[in-house]
Image (tube, rainbow, N blue to C red; front, top):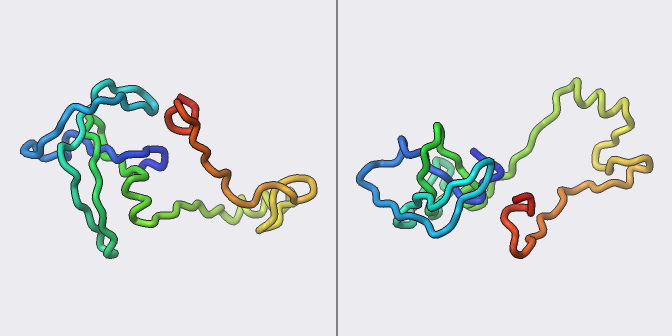
Length: 128
């Protein structure tokens, strides 16, 4: 699972040797950079035990694990959340946090995630 990956990457060790790949025309950027990465030659179907299904065309790279990216997670309608421990909730409450309100001296801060704005000519969120 990789919440920052736009496309899924299947580890070369998990990729059946009989399945064809092509060399992608683009450079893959993230924590590092791979020029001309391998990508599945065909779009592959997938399904899970909950009945979700879809298609994806993953990159195939020498990684220790496979990374499921937003291409699949979005199709699965996955929402990732992190619940705070009781201790963390207590600390936040002691600092004036009110559930459902924004952070700030008057509880006026943003209560929803910051929307992603695509920046033309940039990769990812503009940090590349």
